[in-house]
Amino acid sequence: MMLMNLAILIYTGRNLPLVGKLNNRLEVFNEMSVCYVTFNMTVFTHWTLGYNISTVSEEMLSSTIDLLPNQDVMDSYGYMMNSLMFYYIYTNILVIFYFIIRQLSLVFTKYCRLGKYYCFGQGKINERKPKGP
Image (tube, rainbow, N blue to C red):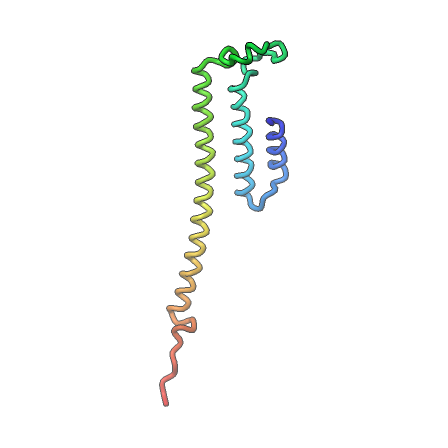
């Protein structure tokens, strides 16, 4: 799983498959965050303390408390992983709001220009009919 994440990160970083610099940077950021969270998940596995899994008996595997690190270490890694995931989600939400505000400003600019065009006598709405017989 970790090797697949690294391969996708390398592919995304080298080829830049999306249109636009910001989209490619956000994709690389998301791939790096997935890799980092995947690497952090190894703390919660049986291989954390360097046990050779072939020499571990089934009785040891059934009671995973002996194989896992100290509860305080696991708690600190859990808090760190949760805070990093919050940071990744927060960053993506900020980018989404940036694109929303950018699109709304473009729509606002378009309709303001159309309003000025029609309200100040350049469009068909304010055309005056000539006075006379």
